[in-house]
Image 1 (cartoon, rainbow, N blue to C red):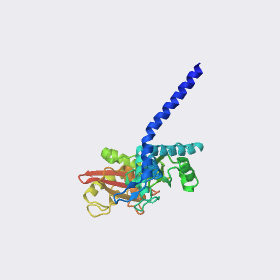
Image 2 (image 1 turned 90 degrees about the horizontal axis):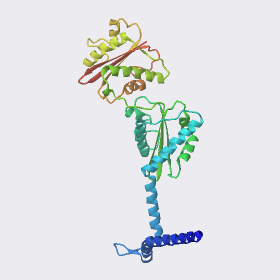
Image 3 (image 1 turned 90 degrees about the vertical axis):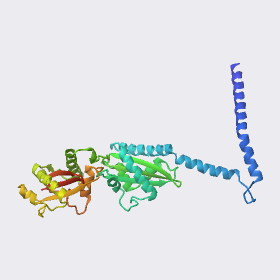
Length: 338
């Protein structure tokens, strides 16, 4: 008895579904059949025909593009790739790569450049890693993988392609890397995907939020951080060398450069303080942009081919850092000595 009732209910449900489908589809089919059979008059009076297949293809393309460019779809794609990269690293017992908002901001900007010029060279002709300096993220060791592929070329396929290239594979498995940002964008039927790897997660630390003594501390720390990344010994904060830098900071605020008020070369201050017996170099700078970090300032000297202050000179053992605050900005003097 119960089985009979169940069968009747199922049959009634099927009939109801068929009736609803017929009601919904009837106007659509009628309209399309009318268009297909009679043709549509153009403004010139000539008759044109529009087939169902033409409507379907165009609609399908638009639907696909809407799906591929959808922010949620892109987010899922890049999240899956991020997780797959970390899974590969975990298989080799390497540390999990982390992300932060600062690294993501750099990757977002870098991906916009790749959309314009798919290359490890930026649109301005410089190397991809110069973007960190430009955005005031200091000295960052980085690697970059990117791919341009059809949207149906999934995250696993992108990763497998990268693993077939020596440089891309090296970035994925580099032991020293700690950070990763993955970004994907859709353009002209293609997915542009970037993976940006870094040794240290970048953070903005603008000088404007600190007072003068704190800035001095940050500069000492940045000095030794940059040296450590090159395998060099740290320099010691020396009281006498710092005193010389303090004198010079005041002098530089009145006469910018390496000459003193009386026209003597800057090194005479070292002899006046009884510490002129060892080789030393001086770096001076007027800091007007307080959005810069201490790392930014030291990195500029570290990357110059012929810097006035060679912060990466292996022989330096001591350093002195001093500031002179004026209406023009902050005058910085760093003296390093063997």
